[in-house]
Image 1 (cartoon, rainbow, N blue to C red):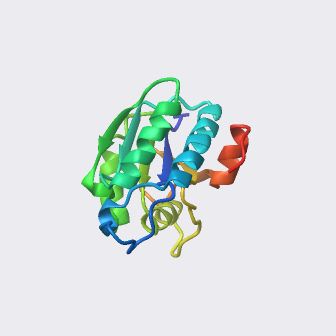
Image 2 (image 1 turned 90 degrees about the vertical axis):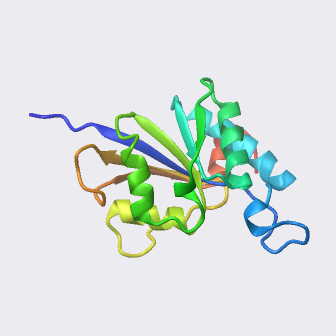
Image 3 (image 1 turned 180 degrees about the vertical axis):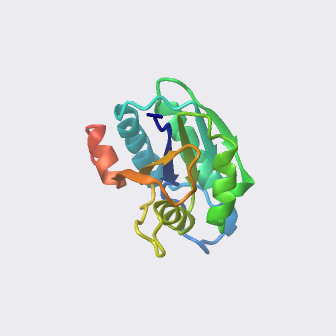
Length: 174
């Protein structure tokens, strides 16, 4: 019998950023808030406690997503490589994100850092749902295992971590 190999795909929504339309900030250039940075540091420590040894983080090039990716990388034992990708810009379609993942399918695990509602739509697409089946809170993460050699839409939701749960894993409060 042939054993199926899975890609452990983690979708991490960027942490709390300055509100859209705030004076002095372009929408696409909004940084994380001080609160967002502090909560993400705690959540990243919780992600570390999950025991995954990530080698690669692919992030939207938006400042809020890149900063979130750097905070995660800082908290991990092995410092993963961070690659910005325009395929994760706000408004990314499930097909575009799928094509991005296909380039890295030989990896055991992969972290994507991006935006809503794109990630909820993509997760739902991977799970074969017609409508959004999950919602990622800012700084929240989910894991979906995707079998190699199978069509998208056949992923398995392994976990959904709200940011408060990730902070609890780090033995802290958000």
